[in-house]
Amino acid sequence: MFERFLSSETKYLRTSEIRDLLKLTEGKNVISLAGGLPDPQTFPVEEIKKITEDVLTNYSDKALQYTATPGISEFRKELVNLSKSRGISGIDEKNIFVTVGSQEALYMLFNILLDTGDNVLVEAPTYLAALNAMRSRRPNFISVTVTEKGPDLNELERKVKESNANGKKVKLMYVIPTAQNPAGTTMSTEDRKRLLEIAVKYDFLIFEDDAYGFLVFEGESPPPIKAFDKEGRVIYTSTFSKILAPGLRLGWVVAHEDFIKEMELYKQNVDLHTPSLSQYIAMEAIRRGVIQNNLPKIRRIYKEKRDIMLEAIETYFPKGSRWTRPVGGMFIFAWLPEKIDTSKMLEKALQRGVAYVPGASFYADYSGRNTMRLNFSFPKKEELTEGIRRLAETIKQELST
Ligand code: PMP
Image (cartoon, rainbow, N blue to C red; front, side, top):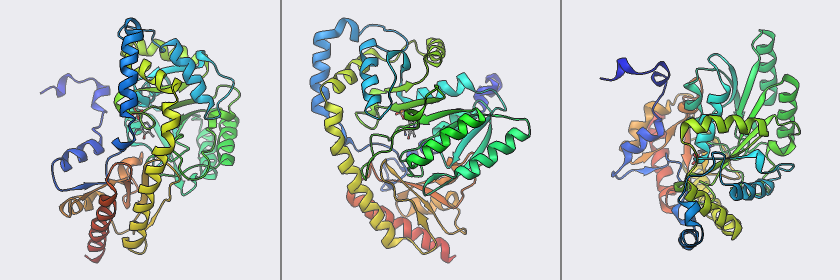
């Protein structure tokens, strides 16, 4: 009915395969390894209750009022400290911008920077919702293979050189260096530095999505690429969704102050500012140490769940499959024997009572047909083993036909 009225940009929007899938599994006896939700056990409910009451008692005139577009000043100061705890130094309030989840940061950034046909480097696979946000800008994607160690930087440099030689400079790389969604891979510190050197050499921007930087449960979390950035080439984003609660819808950007000003202009047209109440709640959560104190619990829960899922995969998955062994985050990524098309197999998996996300949706060119993303943060522990068992049966059945 509205087709003929839609703008050309709207026509390029795609519905998220994940959301469609979740709809399919709702209310049925299906174990969903498809989602990407935090475990609600990780929400510090009592602390948030107390904080909300205190915020409304002490700051209701500000917390329920309109506020400045880049965010509440005191909150931005706390975000400077939180970002410093990730190793980012030499910044102050002017370098911080508060967003409605990091999703808004992705959306704004791509809209601020990308024109049709611009060359963008993306990991293959990469975060689906980022790809979709980029797609509406109709850029030219240059995919870089993700190995168990993160993006293949030799391939990346070769592709950048090729592109530049053809007179089409690369403008931007979108990258998730830690506990990548969907691959679960983490780049080494060395690779992070090298990627920044390549960006400097060929003069492109890096957009670093550190959604899972605080969620490394095995070994140290490497510093973000932003920590090595001396000239403002890296635009960094992170989120409260995985360290406090996604329902607050809070994310933030760390960037050169000139870029923050561009974001301010853009956001004025989108939603004026991020909800004040959420900002006050998160600010108090940082000040009272709620976030830092809760992180060990979140990491413990996710490590335990990862171990259960990995063990089940090792036990049940057929030969010829390989998968990542994430040191953080919420996802394991699997490559199945070439014969398998995970999009086609999904219906059979659902019939057996298990859901996953077919990997093709995480590739800019929809390749990766034999891959899948498995979520271990949300399902209950007993569901993890049973879900993988059902999935392995489906795969073996598919291989035998
Ligand atoms: N980036 C990545 C890599 C994610 O996995 C997610 C959430 N799944 C987001 C950004 C967006 O999260 P939010 O908007 O809740 O901050």
